[in-house]
Amino acid sequence: MRIVFMGTPEFSVPVLEALVEAGHDVLCVYCQPARPAGRGKKERPSPVQARAEALGLPVRHPTSLKTPEAQAEFAALGADVAVVVAYGLILPQAVLDAPARGCLNIHASLLPRWRGAAPIHRAIMSGDRETGVCIMQMEAGLDTGPVLMCEATPIGETETTGALHDRLSAMGARLIVATLERLDTLVPRPQPEAGVTYAAKIDKAEARIDWSEPAEVVAAKVRGLSPFPGAWCEGPFGRLKLLNAVAEPGTGAPGTVLHGLRVACGDGVLRILSAQRDGKRAMGAEDLARGMDWPVGIVLT
Image 1: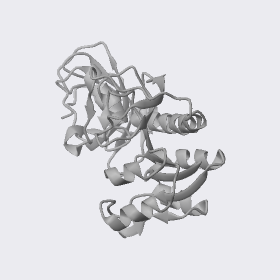
Image 2 (image 1 turned 30 degrees about the vertical axis):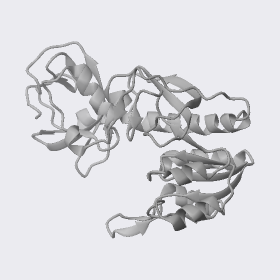
Image 3 (image 1 turned 180 degrees about the horizontal axis):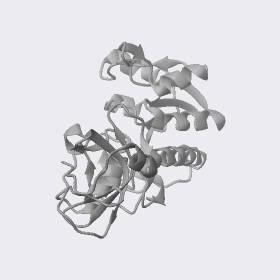
């Protein structure tokens, strides 16, 4: 098919590669403009732009698609379909209507659960046992369109957002290729009204750990916010970013360090599996125990 690809972050890159490998004609790649990054604040192209240029594909990065000029340029491509995954701009109706067979979105949740910006984070933070990928026909509403194909996957007991992100990216790449192969025969399934939840964008203010919460809740927050922005706490050794943890039975005053990198919570105990101090590399439990002073009884806040 003649495809316009629209995506920006690393999550989108395997999808672009899969479309090219499947033999589709990628007419143009749309992504967000380059942003200042690093200590020198030099403009750095997005992962999708860098990969598209390496593949020899034309790239556009408009700041908006709302102007008549941008919409006319998009329509002039004459695409059969647009494939959209984590693009970052709202598509006006004129853009949604331009491809002959519409715009297809790859969404990293089991819709209608977790519509919105941060479905992977929210699924883990809420303690969901499974998630997945949906291929959806786009319409004006926020992730409200009918679903063409869907695949579920369990969330591992210690799986972080970073690990699940990579798995769902690969699933989405595989699923969109299968969807395009069967596009003539697939019947769009409207999303049910029951079970709608919204995955609000992650706010860094959410990241501080509240040790009075149950250990299950704290562990889900740690895994859901790992690796970015990272759930954190303060201790005698400064700020500590927790990267992975599990809940276990136990008791103690909330925030109190117990034996074996365990911290008491409002209900139960959090066992730290990996963490990172400011300016230091991430460390697993054994390295943490050797490299830091963890006397039993100190209090984390």
